[in-house]
Length: 568
Image (cartoon, rainbow, N blue to C red):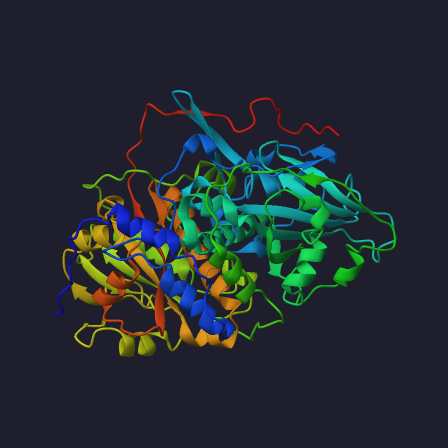
């Protein structure tokens, strides 16, 4: 039986070492895009002796503004009515079972309310902070959302920025030119304000921003599913074109404000389609009747640090061409929920666990259902893009009835098991978990009490050991990054989609999950026997029964707004 290596070294980086790390801000050496990605990923790893370069101290009273706004724009308050949606969460996995809602101001409002909107306000003493439906590293929310609208009632054709604090749209550009077609069309663009994460996390922040994009992607896909809609990742737009579409290249509108990095573009599909019906150039153009408005607000007037490597890795991973490939989706049977809840209720109650009950356990049936939802199929959320699965969870099973504690792997593609088996420790068992349904490729690697290892790998956070299980996500790294450095971003999106599925399914089971971005990269690799960079750890997660702090008050998300009111 293989032996799990336990790490019990304490976090002990000295002030002198931290200072040296902070001064190590030299740019990455000139190289290919793939080499720059590998260099960035390596330099931003945490280790048992020191953490990736970041600020020495934080003043939370100086936290960057979590809400981007554009001055001098038309503000359109969106209706609040998401809780009126009765779609069960299980129906989102079978979208053909009900009729999609038409595009309207009300349905657009519900989409954004359930994806990028505020789910609650929290208060503790003098402190007050917002929770949102899209999870975020450190609750810092670097992700911004833009809408490109065509022929939607009560919305002029053009570009809008979503302000989650107010559940409102700011009209950034209106297009008076005639657009082809009569059907409504809705595109959603996502961008990242890297400084929001870098303020707290330093050089590692680019990773967290991409994980947040992936969570926003998952949040949008589930919200769309509650309306009977699908989403499609627009492949035929590169970063430069997307910057132009979203107005992020307008330097005069961001003269003093923090830059936003364009990430991706989605199209809302009311009916299954193989591709877009529209030429994107007709949606937003700088000629032919386009009228721009708005100046971005400054989020942090006194930044204390600068991390040049973030701009460099962003430049190295910008998309220049379409890289999607044809994917033959599996047709695994979908396990049925023994219990179900309305999707809107699950989404709005989702929280990131802060503490977990170290004595609680979960059933094997619930665990298998969670894993079943992680398998790629032509259904939410995996129908967003056309890529082979490249991220594979490795589980630290602590307390699941009917399953031995130990280390397990879940290969998510046809050849992943063989590749993982070749890369991981030779003494691992690779025994199929016979207690699980036949179609679930869950393999026992070694039987052991992994709680101490899970805690240490997760930067000594008890939450990784106190859950019913935790996991690390291994990404196929070298081959994917070499094919296109842009896919470094996409690997994080896929990992975050895995996490997002676990978040929502945990809520259905009266459990709670939380993403773990702070982990000791190579310590996890060493436990698994990984020596090269064929596979790399991308994201960690844990699920268990939450312990709630009753001292923290919960307030409604939009206390001064009535459901279904529309003001303009």
